[in-house]
Structure formats: C-alpha cells, structure tokens
Length: 476
View 1 (cartoon, one colour):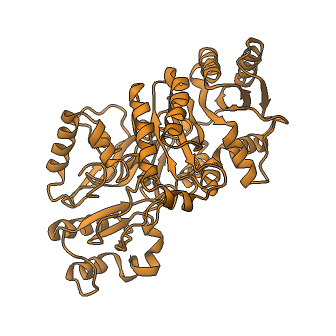
View 2: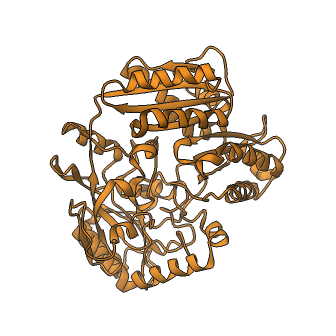
C-alpha cells in the first residue's frame, strides 16, 4: 500500500477537498478511532475521514483505489474482533460513517425504513416507534453501535429467536464498491429475483467487499402485550427444558431467552449497586425470558413457567409487573459486558453450537478453560435460544489482569483455542455474531475447509482486486 501520512500528500489533499478540512482527523483528535471497546487492541494512527454523503464516499473510495490506499470502514467502534482497526500499518485511512446518520424515509405500508449506515441502532428504534412500528434488532450496545456495522458483521443480539439476525431484517442495501461505483439496491420489494443476491453477499462481509452506506430495514408492528420473566434454575440442561416448553406453548411469540450464570449476575450487582438480583437467595443459573404478542401471551407464559416449577425445571420465577420492572430485569443482562470489563476479563468468546448441545458445551468449555490454567474463572451467558453462549474468562481470584497476562504471555490465545476446539467438537461455529475481524482470522484459516477459503479468496479477488477494502480483516 502507498504511504499516506503527511499533509503534503496529494491524495490526502484531494480527499480534504471532497469531505472538507474538518472532516479529516489525525493525532489526538482521532485517538478514539484507534481503540477497541475492551482495551485489547490499539490500532495504528491512521488518517480518519468522515464523509457526509454516499457521493463523498464514492469519490474517496475511487481516489484510494487509484492510489492503492487501504480503507478501514468504521461504524460505532463497538466491534470486539478488531475489524475496525488497522493493527499492522498506518498506510491506510479509517473511513467513519458517523456523519451519515439520516433516516431517509419510512414507509408504513411496506414496513420499511431506509436508514444511512451511521444511524445509531437506538435512534432507529426511536424513529420506528414514532410511526407505531418497531425495528427488532437489539443488543447491549444499541446506544452506540450503528446499523452499518450491524449489517457488516451480520449482528445477532437478543431477539434472534423470533426475528432473526441483521441480514433477516434487511430487504435492500446501498453500498460503495472498491471501484467507487455505487450499488443502489434499496428497493423495499420482498420478491426480487433479478440476479445474484448482492445484499446478502455484502451483509456479513465486514467491509472487505464494499462499504455499506444505507439499508432498507424491515419494520414490524408493535406488540400489544409484552412479558418479561426472570427464572432461577439449577443448570443449562433445565434451561433447555424451559425453552422447549415455552416454544411449544407460545411459538414465535418468544422474542428471546438469555442464560445468565449466578457468578455473572453477582458481578453485575457488585459493580452496579443500583441493580439488584430480584431473588433473596443466590442460584447457580438464571433465565431472562422475553415474549410479546396479542393479549393473553403473559397468562400463557406464566402458566408454562408454573408448570416448569411443578416439574422441577425452575426453582423460582419473578414476573415483571411494569415497564420499569422489565427494564430493571433487562439491565442485569445489558450491564453484563461492562461488569466483565470491570472485573478484568482477559478473554471473551463468541461461539455457537446446536441448541441441544448447550449443556455439554458449557460443561465442556469450562473443563477446557480450567485445563489451560487452574483457577481461571468463567462467566457464561448469552442467547440460549439460538445456541450462542459467550464466555468471559478472568484470572484467578486475587490476581490483576495486567499481572496475570504479564506472567502468562499468550494465555488468551490458548484459552480461545481451547474454547474453539470444544465448540467445533460439538458441531459449532467459532464466530456467532461478532464476525472474524483480525482477531479470529487465523482461527478461520485453521478451521475452515480449504474449499471454503478458496471461494472466499476468489470472491475477494474478483470484487476487490487491489485489496483496498479492510485488508487483513476476515481473510489474508
């Protein structure tokens, strides 16, 4: 790649002419673009470019393609696999979509919103609600993640059980390709068989094939009744029994079900004293259950959980009686990532297994983690309804993260490798919803079939022959 650091660089001056002097940042003004949210990586201090329109993105990409300058797309900066960072070279630009934050249109008849890539997910929720609709993609980082990043990584979140992943909630896309050409496919049509589905090729491609600049998002009607329950259980096996009972009884009115360890709930309450466990006694595991639909769904859910108590699958249940109580229960889950960081997690995982294997997965990975180093502590939690359970791993009690990593270099990679092996042994995936990025690139190379890797490289070469789009992410 061409070196790209000085103000005298002709291409940089051309980019400034396109986006404006103040829309190019470097040095201390750009420091936040070089950090990942967990403090695990620090990127190189590249020039940060902030275009405001698709036309500006197109012009910048065209210039970079001609000059052979790499582009690192940047959304909300919430990615945890270093997909938005340049770790190896400062001969690149970081292209942030944050100024492209407009909702272009909402069509209640089509149940479609057209939003630009820099729209924060929580703002999309609010805009949908202004039209008495909802956009069901949701996750703990909703206040800072952007829809462009959500689509680039095919984010999942807490309602996959009912509504699917990000790709399932997108009917059209606009993207700037490596040549600078704009792909305009924002039609709200549900039926459109006119060639290859380029939308799905770009979704989940992590910015390696093009830059998503806008999307047509699927909206849903607001549910007239919602129910949230917090259950105390003794094991992940019991969680599966509860999941099966609820899915059988209320079907696709189940929004999501989150498995939470007692250890993890304790960490949340320790670091966030305003939050509390609604049960007087501690339990080894908890379930956070969310369902919605027509009036009656609450009564049906409550009846199923009462039957689960009778059968011994559930120890106790708290049903939210108000929106404030629903929010308080969900806060226990939403504050889990921050509690993990505050406790000193040095390794986190994002893997998925078949739902029926979750009990074996949890016990197997805990054993594998302990096998790497005796005394490691693990908080397991996540989306049991789609098989995506996260592990956050901490040093033994009494040892700081910094001291532990200094004494045991490379241990994070060894723990991640042990989790990956346990996952794959059960027919799982090493990346469920966070993507591959740069963190897991070698893991993908190691575990994917040669034929799959060959096809990925062929697609990359065909669309981005100059390798300017997020080089080093996902594949070499």
